[in-house]
Length: 471
Image (cartoon, rainbow, N blue to C red):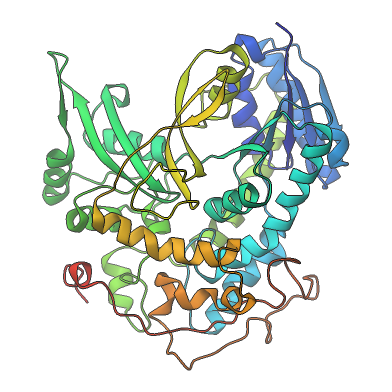
């Protein structure tokens, strides 16, 4: 069998490239793949080239590596396209997303999925994803895109809405990653867990989460998790050793909702109206909400990367450990026909009955030589679907579900995580004093002309949930 061509758009994300390709090179069918690295940053591209070459030498891979600054050339004849980039980078765009919102009284933790920061990121990113789809249509129409770019749901939705012929799936590691964390909280082997999960990206829930018993039967671990939390045995310190990010928010929501959510506490705190409120520092302290976490993380990761790169340059080999990412699993399944199951973000075509048709959902997908085949879930518990709908409302407006331009300009009125922090007449234009000279006036041609108005409308919190979260 011939080897595939794997194109990596955003290859300057060197640590991510290392994880994905480290997995790829450990699969016999992919070991000889042609790796086409593409990035607009020549320095970062060269750094990734060094790391990938040492990865290949470390595991005995013998494929070709090519480096490109021209995207279409890199995509020519590709079988798989991995997309992982952040338009605007940490500076100026992440800094601006946080600084401007903070100036108008809006606190954020990660700001890559929803809220003003997530919306801005989508507006910056979607036109570039569309451009990739244009190129793929021309030079590799049969390739499968594996998209890792946030905001995942909005980006994936925007692509399949305009380019339904492109084979693509949005990938995140929150489903498999959280399962490992919960196993660790209970001192279980993750291999002994089985689960069924569904929802939307960063707000999917484990509909069942079970451990294997000695007799081969399975039993839910939800009662054990609740007891461990009540006893103070869970959550344990996170696997990344970040003391700022404790898992309190998710366990509290688990107590109220009856189901555990996949995305981290620092993310989930800004998707709902209960944890980040003006003048409520007591909530921030009680639930250990790490405000401004993403900018801090960016600075730390950049410093760590320089040290790590030097060690790669000095060493003869790179230690290769399996990652949590699904990319190599998908490539191997499609290329060899060996079936696998992953969780992917796809179009809701009768997959989840009580979420809008056409919205982007995260469900289990069978992958084999026929490609990525999402599986039907049916109806979610009503209260979970209601919570997801608050996020889907914003996604619908941004991706063009509403034909009226003004609807897109007022997106953040409908963002549940920030709407409760502003009054109905409290308007702020994010351009006012906040636009970097390096940012275009029209961040997303074809989506919305000016930046989103920070128009906030008062919202009545769903009573069934607000009574449970102490104010």
